[in-house]
Length: 532
View 1: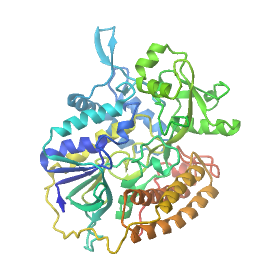
View 2: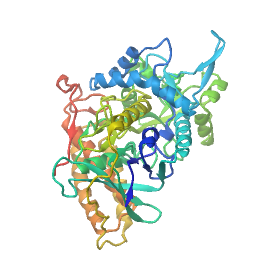
View 3: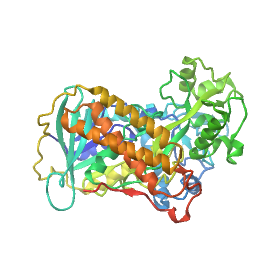
View 4: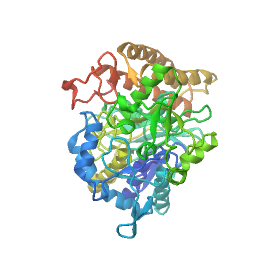
């Protein structure tokens, strides 16, 4: 058994920043599925939204967030996170984070180069050109490397949380750690800790097309749900409007900042269309832009739409978006001369494990921060670049919350993982087929536009698939493909059940059977909990 004072599952901005802050108080284990830099954070292009200029204000940032959230945000949470953003930005800079700067002719010095994205009324996006997430990971991992109290376990995949109730103890449910699969050795290890943080990111791989890396299989939500934690608002899956459409481009995101700097959406016949959907045109909130693109593609039968920024100077485009420029050029697209073919793709889960603004779940000793959690900040639709803001603010608050807790190993007997008579699977084709089937049915039936009939069809098929997956899970030795399949099936079921419970269209949940928002469902979360 591996015993630590703090167990962190995930190595994005939430997990790493939290680990740095609790390390002075005890030994920290960071468990991550691939290498330590592989996370949704690493792929974030746009940046972090925070009020850092005199032209901006907390009130404006709050208003923009509430408007994007379509009546479901918790205003007190929004105000708290927005107000604490600048202090967390200052900490990142002190750690060595290099945000892009520009010359300010008014006072003859360098200032932060603030970008603008959809739904924002002011320029407030701090960025590192178009590779902000990569720069955040670099800075945080450099700081982690200097911390002797932190140990990173790469290529380790958490299977399930260990809870007192699962072990048969009576009383309030407590999290005692997790069983973790070592992908290199093929063994299952027990990690025990009085405090466990879920920082596992989102669930984009539940869908056939996504901007997320392969690791985003909803592990944290699935584990927390199986452990008995409340999960909320999982029907609100954000589809990023602009994923590069190219047969060889697996999941490359074209940052919203491209539209923030003047990029215009057009049909494949070069007709601008966003003015028919929203006054902000191409800079409308993501839910509106994604639905508009989906509508235009269905009307024309086209496979994509176009994002055109060729009217801007080539030098500006190359300097502002070097990664996007080089990547597209590698696929034969010169974005300074031709528009970029784009399609919507699953991008971000706005719901998740129910937490307070301090990251507390309803299971003692279990915290959740970042995309895996649902604090109430995002509501029915996340405002661009608020995700990294939420992660770094709530990670700080979670670390502060436990500062007075006595760090000790719980006085429980935790058994080793039992694999029984399991043997290696000889029909992995079944796992691969079920994996593909779930992702395709979620894309076809539970995508940008939904109907009750499609949702019910998805629910029925998922129930059958779950029977096959459970049989496989208990009959065979576990491996990473089987564990991730189990998780995406669980998360898919939660998304469908949540969507069926909400009889309205609000934000990212657009149902043709209920095309209007229902005032009675404003400020009303869809909460699910696994029945015992």
